[in-house]
Image (cartoon, rainbow, N blue to C red; front, top):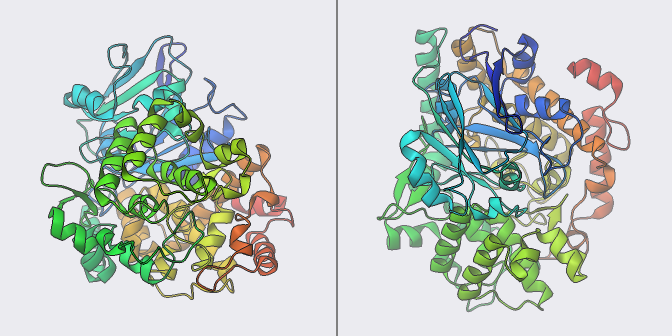
Length: 579
């Protein structure tokens, strides 16, 4: 490949051997998988079967061809590995400056294998790559660790939860802005390698093939972002909490572990609305590298405020009426390095097992800390909703798919989104297809959220779309305004290649099939592409998902993907995709 967009260099670090080297990837690898999630998926798949917490499991931090340029909303980087929580292939991407610094240091990706004999951190500054002792850092949480290392570059680190191998542990970058490689227990994988942190600083730049065309395409994207009300009047003004009012109005905000349509009359949801938060906190905007949207929020002291998913699942779903407690629980999760969705999900399960006893503000903070410390009941809760519910004898009370707790949207009222949960390669996740966009926010066009009709096709298209987006790597929020055509155009300007929207969709489909093959190899099958039974059996707000229709939609989805009746990609499909 040329050296426009890509760096054509992948860093490889073996902690067991204390060895560092790099290699030039084959042209086809970058052409067929772009970077980010796609590159990571291919590398992790080709590495073969491993135990998630074994030294042989890889951590692959991969930037995309647009990372490090000033392409709107491109300041992201992807992480791929095997999840200790779900057993599936797993990717997570985050914003901040870590990805751009990696590219400016001269690398498209960093592959980390092995396990250090003692706690270590990796320091990368251009061609200088060193494995250093982190004995003095071990036992510290994220903020303290980051404050010690931040002068060396952009920091990605684990807190005590990752050190203790808590299956809900995340990796946090640039803690002042709190960007997380969340979900799936990726922080536990890092902890299993005795790797405390990675610090990256680059002094180079990412070359662009056609600066004039790049400037033109960049302006076109920015105009579309400004023209989109969801971005300019929603995300840019209020951040993601603007969704609380919308989902509560649609009756899809989860209540009482997804058992009710709305909370009790004395439970005031308005205190969680973005407008209320804005009036009380006067939040300040925080933006990722090269992002005009600026969806993150912090208070006047520069401390992070929770996003929609955290608010939705730590309020009515556990019957906690106190926003202040959510703010503090969110900060605890970030400091210990834990996924707020999964922590809230297991607490909802815990509440239902106790006959819907509410999680009080004090208990929310106490249990969050105990999960991070792997202490008493926190050890069991920290295994995640699926394992916890099974250990308590109530497996049906875990609201999860493939071991991953569902996000803050009840699938009975957004049925396409629910179908995408079930068919997600990484488990119960809204970002795989992100049908929040058309079913809730009516972008890029509105589709009926109350039916499964047509959702097999919509799910496939959006899954392929965002697999490519995660490989560029670009923020999904940008696609409320722009689309594949605009980003194909700017990719062409950056790299000098000729890319169309169809090319991006093909790359996305290829990635989705590689991830499916990985999961099949790990023992996942058709029986795992399903939602919890309560969504088929229990009505909420008069709505339920018809199981027979769901299974027919699943069969249709398999056919549209070119898979057999058991959801296995056919040889013909794999040949066409060049997998």
